Image (cartoon, rainbow, N blue to C red):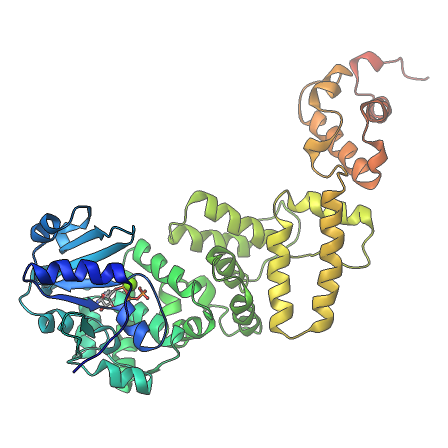
Length: 441
Ligand code: ATP
Ligand code: MG
């Protein structure tokens, strides 16, 4: 046989300790698959016939990662964490959970895995590659095929539908036709999954170099409609391809920004703040359904809301500052990232150049120290009250007016000048208690 996959030395150490104790240690799953594809990665998983308590006993530092599933985390001396899982077989499945029992052989263990390309095992001690489902041939032919009967496999765990779309999309594989057919027929079962598992899958799709392939498969198979009907409704709009192309251009490490770009296929009303924008409402529904953290939900909604209008090259400096104050602190970089991505995706050199120009101005305004936020005003609510204005909404109205004037003319932002402006406004409106002069007859 003789097959060398060149795993990290620390993995070999972990495997050797198991082998020296008389157990089998097989590298399995994603790392084996990716290695065969020429993609190096560090997160190797091991399958073994040692029981979890025996694994725990063999190693100095272990972490109970999922002992009920037979998984023990082993910390190697160099600090890498490897998952060591006892061979398993499914006893009972219901589409979302599985009751598993320990199995005796690697072949049994491989038979319960989802796709042939994920059902390849490699044993360092004997340099043996175990591939009972011909996953290697499928990898070479770039085919995604379920292990065994596809309809049964999806019905055992509907997450495999989403995993299938992810693998086919991110590795650009073609579905084996019966697998594709069963996958599509299983799409309605997706509604039985938990939000956490569905979200985790989406996060992995969005972390791929080019999520567009998998996202297009989500749409074409109908999977998008189950968990993301608000997006699916617009997946054939003109903006869809544009959105996917932009997502591919965004940083894979900022999945949330990519998700935001995807949600932007939902049209926004973008009129005055008072109105309830159905687009905003739909986006809020999606991110809540996915159970994103409150902070993540806020970030997405905020960017969605301020995506447009963007500042434009003909805007004055005052307008740039107004725009910055409108979108709020810490927002412009993300908004520009999304617009840059779209322009790059479209190959629109003029738009990219215009964006570079605008970004310099926006960034320059931000760095200039010119007052932008309400909090930058050299005068606050207490100062307004000291002028004799009754506490209440009027205070805020006055501050907003002064804020607008300062955005227009930053030189106004001294306490002296603003107090003068404020007094004038108060007198003009007859608001101050001290300025209640007898009306002219
Ligand atoms: P990646 O880590 O790149 O997302 P992976 O293939 O390693 O891909 P994991 O979720 O880490 O995916 O799972 C490791 C292995 O466990 C898979 O390769 C597959 O053999 C098996 N596996 C994981 N989830 C399932 C599932 N829902 N059904 C069947 N087998 C699964
Ligand atoms: Mg993995």
